[in-house]
Image (cartoon, rainbow, N blue to C red):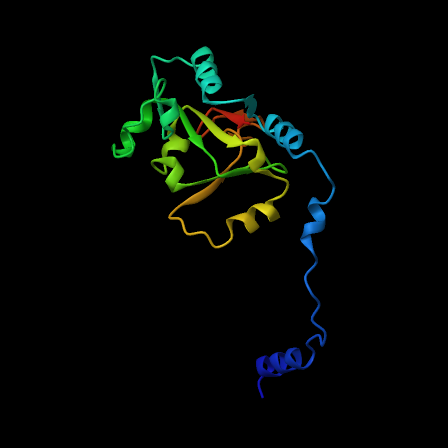
Length: 195
């Protein structure tokens, strides 16, 4: 018998006899934390801005007051057609390079890291949240989960062509040990927390 076979045989003979159950990860979210307050705090800490709104009219007012309406704004949300183009989904992705603001919806958010779950059915084009100068994402307050464990349970076995978690504006600290926001994607992120 070769040395390799001898070693593998000894490993087989010395396997643990008892297999233990995995720990119950639901305990991690039993702290009764205020998920909305936690979400807002974490989002601010990573460079994003939470804005609580009651309806789409308040979102329209906010965008008019804080963004250059004459620049290109896109969305997939019909309620925002007053301020944003809806007819861009079939455009060449390269033509989106001049987008100032993209407003999309998220399926849900996660308080522990302020991530928002989006899939291709909400994006219009996969590149849209990453190529725009600024990104705004709308999520219902009731759809903020406490932990990523809960997020993965909610995603489950859903079928989608593309899905990603987005958290905060793009950033890097590689350049001379200095944090740079908007280094390789959206320069800013607004999260509209909808009632």
